[in-house]
Length: 198
Image 1 (cartoon, rainbow, N blue to C red):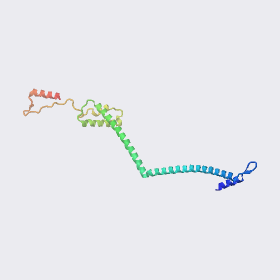
Image 2 (tube, rainbow, N blue to C red):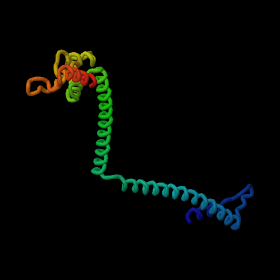
Image 3 (tube, one colour):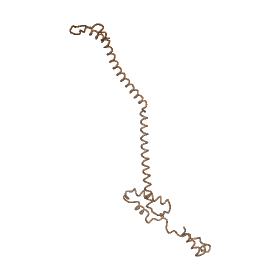
Image 4 (cartoon, rainbow, N blue to C red):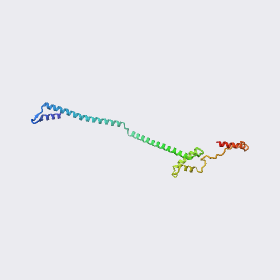
C-alpha cells in the first residue's frame, strides 16, 4: 500500500540521536507492523460506526415504508374523516336530544303541578292544555310570565275544560204514566243516596 511504502521510506531515511543512527530493518518492520495494527483498529472503528449508522438508517427507512403501506389512500382517508365527523354530529345531537327531553319532562311536571287538584273533562283536553302552555312560554310576548299566569289566561271563562263539580243527579226513567218507575219519595231518596255513595 502507498501509505505503508511512504512510512517505510520515511523510517529508512530517519536518523535518530546525535550520532545520526539509522533504524535497522527489524526495527522498521516492527514499527510498520505496530502501525498497521493501529491503522487497522482505527479503520475498523470508523467502519463499525458508519455501518451502525447505515443499519439505523435502513431500519428507519424500512419502518417508514411499512407505515406508508398502512396509511390509507386519500379516498379512504376522506371517508374515515367523514365517518368521524358523522359520529361526532350524531353524538352531539343525541346529547342535545337527551337534554331537551329531560328539560321537557321537568317542564311537564311543573305544569301538572300548577294544575293542582283541577279535574279535566278528558286526558285529551289536559294534554292539549299542557302543549298550549309550553307553546305560550316560548313566545316573546309572554317573556317573564310564569306557568300559573299562562294557565289562568288560557282557561279563564272557558267551558268544557274542567269537570263540573256539581254533577246533575241521574234521574230514573219515567214510566208509561209519566211518573218515575220507582215508588214516590222513597225511590227519589234512594237515588240521592246512591249518588252520594259515588
